[in-house]
Length: 321
Image (cartoon, rainbow, N blue to C red):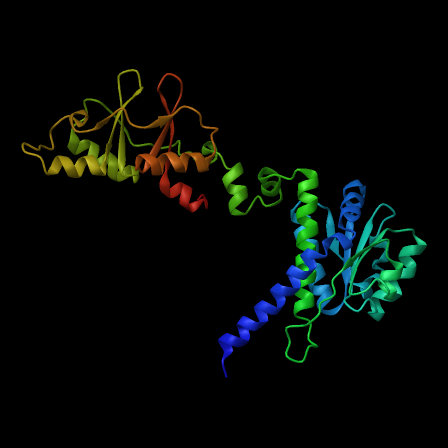
């Protein structure tokens, strides 16, 4: 049995159903649904049972994370007390491929009783759900990917894709940007990239700082204690003068006339890379570190006095990429 061929056929069948729906998109009430949802003062409640319910929960999560206040409500739970979760300013998106799911159909008269706008996803407008709906999205497919043409496969794929299409339309309508997405995902990689600043990660205490006249052997002790792989060298006014990295030390070891008694500044790096704005994004600091191939980025004030150090490991541990 050629399972590669079977898997390929499944993907092709489902892809063809998506393409067919894309060609017929003008027959759907997407534009009207988008306008309705954007003008909504309440929430968008998604409901459905079985596979449609599982897909509906995903659609609700996608909508909620992209700027549309939304949550999933199971029809059975609604009929047993949770109907009160639907307010007079809310909208309901109901999903049922057949449009005849018993638990969902029982809910519809109550929605109409409260004059709740209803957006429906079903295979036909002539279904009970379709007839109750104010706006209709057709999720019919000509063939399920299941070899028996019974298990929801192509239809659930199309339903999920329609939910994504609705979410993207709403994002475009609201001019939803990366910053908005990040505000809903502060713990995600994009949230960290857009919100964590250098000041949030800056090391300020017990920094490995020495004077220009310090002997190398003493500076090595300070470097070891500081555990940053570098020593910061300041002048008589406490302004940053240079930096001695472990790379500078290794190069000095290979040079003629090397001595542990030399003054540290003779082998240090002059004019090290610094920034004067501790409020820049940590992601921008990472780009500077990568561009200049350094391990530490030093933050100074306008006078050149050290305010803190940002080590590449600090960025990695914070999840900045």
